[in-house]
Image (cartoon, rainbow, N blue to C red; front, top):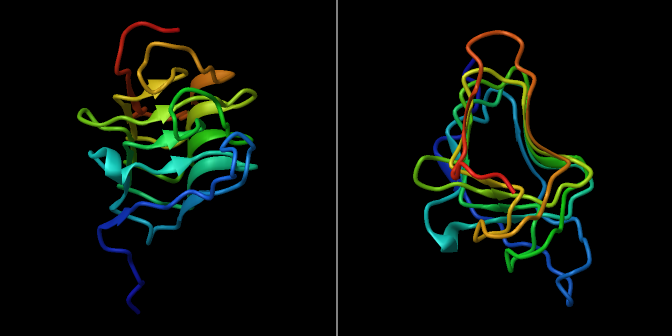
Length: 173
């Protein structure tokens, strides 16, 4: 029996916005679920590829049940489309489960802005071999102002190899 798989998929999801763009409205909750959720790209290197993943009751992005080799890059997660204020998700920005190896939140070229999750976690990594690279976490889109998360990055992967965490800027707001 051949298990169905998603070949390389690039997702850009149009946000559901309120007229005032300030009221939290559940919009794009993204779940990468199961071993068939592999080699997906959520967002991209160009601003036109950006997703607005904000205002959800739970997490913005969830990788669960063996999702692997996925990339989430170039998105606004937990902030408004203007990039200047919070519209956090209920639990946090991105969570990678313990059975979800080799996922990337941001790349050396293009990171996400993951902010505004208070209470909440910017990125929670339970899986091994995953990377959190090049993101602005707890800042506005320019990196010049604070939009805090309660916790920026939580790493709970208990067994090696642990995830690589590399910030975009050395300074913390």
